[in-house]
Length: 260
Picture 1 (cartoon, rainbow, N blue to C red):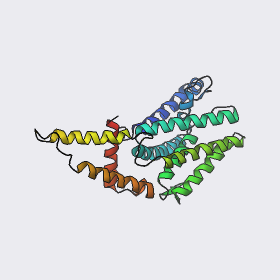
Picture 2: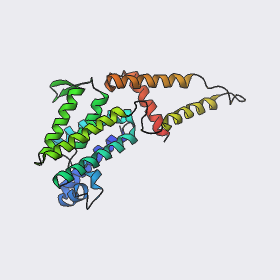
Picture 3: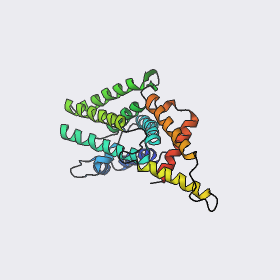
Picture 4: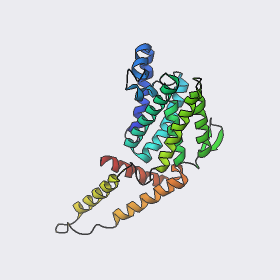
C-alpha cells in the first residue's frame, strides 16, 4: 500500500505516531503538533495528526482517510494529494484561528473537505451511511458540509462553521474546475513526459538504422484509452471503473510519478 498510495499511508502513520506520543507526553506533543501557529508555524499542517483519542473513533477516521485518500491519490497522483491536503489543513486552521482565537485540532475538517472533493468526482456513487443508509455521492456531500458546520459551530461562533463550509465548497469547486485529463494544474508537462518516455522506449526497440522511423500507433491507442477512462470518471465517478480500467489508470499514474 505504501507503494500505490504513499501519501495516504504516511498520513495514517504520522497520526498514529502523534497519538502514541500524546499518550507518553501530552503537554509537549500538544504544543508541538497542535499548538498556536503564531508561535509554531508548522502546526498549520501538523494539527490533523492529533485527532480522535478514542481507539474506535481513530480507527474509523483512518478508515475514511484510507478509503477517500487512497482513491483521490490514485486519480490525482501523490504530489497533488499532498499539496491539496496541506492547503486544506492550513486554510481550516487559519479560519478557526481568525473566528475563535484558538487553533484547530483534529482531522475532521480537512478530511471533510477531501470528502467533498471526492463526491465531486463520484456524484453517483452509492455510500452506506453509518453502514446502514444508502446515499448518493451528492447527498453525502451535503451531509458532510452540514457536519463540518456543526463541528466548527461547537466553538460557539457560527462564523467558524460558515468558514469551514466555504473551505469545503472551495475544495469541491477546485476539483471540478481542474481538467480531468490534467493530473496537475498548470502546463501539462507530465503528459508530454509520458509521450516522450513511450517514444523513447519504442525508439530503443527499433532496429538499427531506423532510429527516425515513425512512432507506431501504440502510444495513440494508450492515450485514447486514458482519455476514455478519465471521461468516464468525470461522468460516472471513479467507482464506475472496471477492474481492467482501474489497472490501466493505476499503471499510467505510476508511470507519470516516475517521470517527475
